[in-house]
Length: 267
Image (cartoon, rainbow, N blue to C red):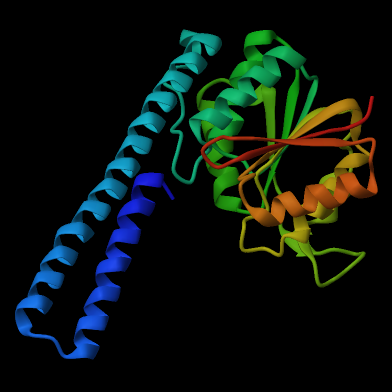
């Protein structure tokens, strides 16, 4: 809590306490009315300051998002316009900008993605821009798969990304854990960059642990795995446990809109 809010909260608490004491002592109504008036004056002030801070944060985020979208547009060029929708349930602009930076810096020949959509379109545009690479994208929602495939085709990006339907199913090692069907991993190899935005949050969090275990054998040395929604505690706990068991792996977090976690494989 902001220091000014703490001061106001203490003042409000003091007034409430004084009112309780006055009521207990049975003091005259004028004294009670004065206490109520004081409380009524302080409470809206604290509420106003809280709303003001929330609005300031929203304005700051809007400015940052505008900057990220403009940066992506410059990186991808005119042929990528209009950019796919970003934000909301889709990939956030700051995470999308991170994806672009990673692709242009690493120039990966193989990208694995779990959870397709706007991010797939952006990454395919980036690969077309650098002239190399292919995305293998998986999603458990057949509707999302079909929509993403159609958008890739419409934009002339089908050669840069393959989107496959990957139903959720109990894992062979532990049927109580739900993750992508085992067929996802057949043929996946030499992955230099992976993006994990699934399975969805309502699935038991160990399902993303399964992804890490399966991905580990498909990654090139020094590969990087990017986790969206990194602010979620269960994802942090999963990666912390992985690095505890595999100390040659490293993980760090980024303060993005939804949080982001970067897991790096050993060289």
